[in-house]
Image 1 (tube, rainbow, N blue to C red):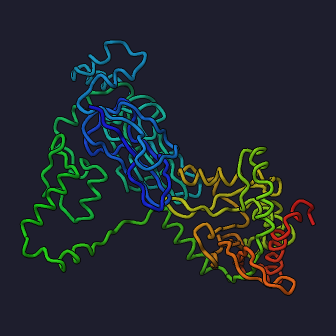
Image 2: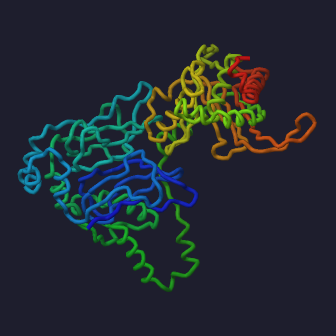
Image 3: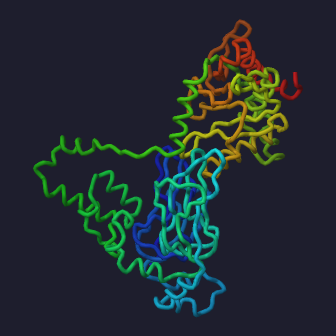
Length: 503
């Protein structure tokens, strides 16, 4: 029997979603409630679990694809269908499935396959250690060459460790949450088919594996939310595995067992739950750096406002031809970046940084763009902005945003930068005081564009206005330079032809 794998119903305010990570591939055997795929929306990551034991027959939406609520993204053949994996291996001989059915010969293949160590990658010079974030495979699970095995999180980026060849993980030596150093061995890997490993693991799954290992992420979350000990729930899944239905049945049984106490006050009290999770390394680093910025700089903020109508009219006039010529939409950020670049040329103090008792003036224009990611705020760098045209800026920002969303930013993307632009307007912020990103000396905050009545030549006009906020380190930048810089940005945005004529 075939089951459709569908995108869950999306929240009312969410139009679409993105396929983030497939944890299985076509031909893989799965058990009921096993997490198959992570689907990412603007706000949350949704898990789609297997509706039954079976084999993944087809995946129709690849990682990175945009999908809608209840869209079919794959199919699952229910039952122990051993033919599906065999059918997927195009050039394998007819003997392959026969070997899969023989545990003894499979074990022999496992032992004869070349064994190697899975190691933590070499970490950047400034990074001392890292944390095991997520294992995407389990011991005995068959993987293909270059398949992502584990995510390792440093202070700034997430590193992926991929399979060196087709084969399987024999043993995991560093579990999730563990701190590891560069080139530490975190698992052993066996090349070649190793169908004997899952069989060995499966035979005594309930006895040998810990209960937390046997739980799918959705079941583990439900148990945590309801504060239930897994040992109290009777599992009806394969090998005694606990399913979501088992947890719900347990909850109903507990309610029936104490009907006299299930009054409204106790229900309300039961909903007053808390969830405690450790901070990620990235969140710890963000917290530490923000606190350092507040404590180690003489930070002030100056404000101004800009009439966005000229840019909005310009975009409306040339949007279609710009996109046709360059293959990318013309956004506001390219105007912001070009205006800031011109202002930095005119006010070199804002493009400088303190190094001990020295002021270091930079004769290049590397601008950090604040990007919100699922793991927190990061500031990847758009380099040599003075040499980029509008299309180059738009493409560069899009590439950095996609890398941030997918956790693909490298250390090189994040190191350096002379000045930061942050755009809280995309979240609806009307005004804010952004915090400097050390060792930089200033940061520009852009905000929501909002229609406001303005006096123009003695008459009131409704104009699309936006507040600008420049936070700066007063130790290196005086009030005259900070205000002059912000006025220059305002002039460039209100008369965008200045950017083209260099006046």
